[in-house]
Image (tube, rainbow, N blue to C red):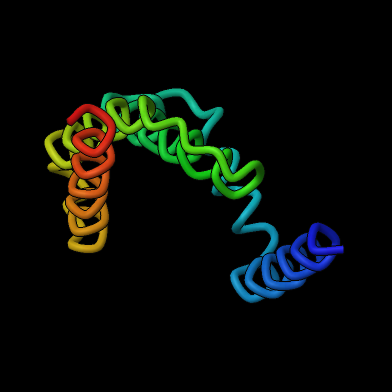
Amino acid sequence: METYIAAALFLVITTLVYARVGFVNIANSYRMWFEEGYWVNYNIVEALAWLAKAAVILPGLIWQKEIWELHIITLLTSALLIWVSERKLLPTMVAFNTLWIGLSSVVIVRNLV
């Protein structure tokens, strides 16, 4: 039952936001992944960092399992993302990745010490 409610909530909120932004604008945003010149150093690091964080979060949400070794990757990708983000040095991005470096550090030390 929880899965159905969560899926419904996801669909409702996503549909409302996409409708407000504009479905065409959202589609154009997703199309950028396939444009020549999009996959430059920053966007590659950002995609890897996003995938690493998803790999840490999803097993915990779905199966209540922590794969702590993945925090080594998120630690590195978060630090690298701040470093390569000269063009997009947004305070929320810097703060989020700084927070994630701290979170990954705690998890790594907890499992190694």
